[in-house]
Image (cartoon, rainbow, N blue to C red; front, top):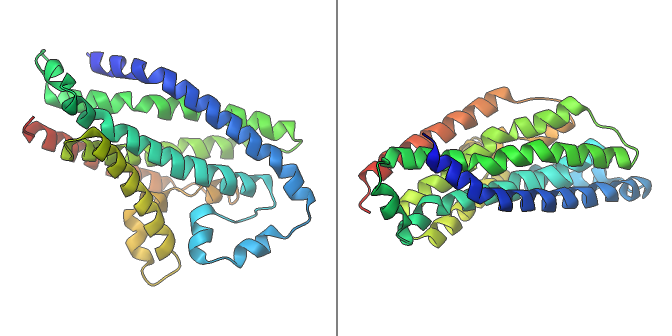
Length: 262
């Protein structure tokens, strides 16, 4: 059991570690800038409040002058919510469609492996970057914060990563769904990026408007790094919604793949 998961996960280890190092170094760079931002004396909060609501919702501007607000806006909202979400949708988009396109899936299904098992175990292998990065990045961030002479609540730092897991799973499920709907791997990957990005933008532009309720279709509505780090508020209900959405999308993906003409 789980031979497909082990094989696919092993293939992703090198790229995951490279991504962890890259994001870790970027995090160190971002955090290293904070002392100069704090010493500048600029009222960044007033500046951010003058920006359109869509921008404030997209990248979070609360308490920008604190290390927690700075991290939420400059690192987590941009890197974790947007870029990491796009990366997971992109990676999942090529997971099935890519193997169909290059004929590798035909060889795999010629063995005693069911289609259902291929979908589920491939999805489980995509947990590799999610688990590894959420274990390593808090260490990078916490060490960098201490190096600049600041402090951050460890529980809040852990929760911002823990609550990101359901969000990233939802992005992964979007990519997987496209991977069985689109026959070409590159198209599925680009479709995953486009879908997650458009949902991100849609949630941002509908915030604080009469159409705010429509933004509930976006995964970003249920994961707010500023609320966690600045307000110390944990949206557990939102995490449950994201987990259910990820599960439903995976179930739909499995049902479609069982009926797909390969």
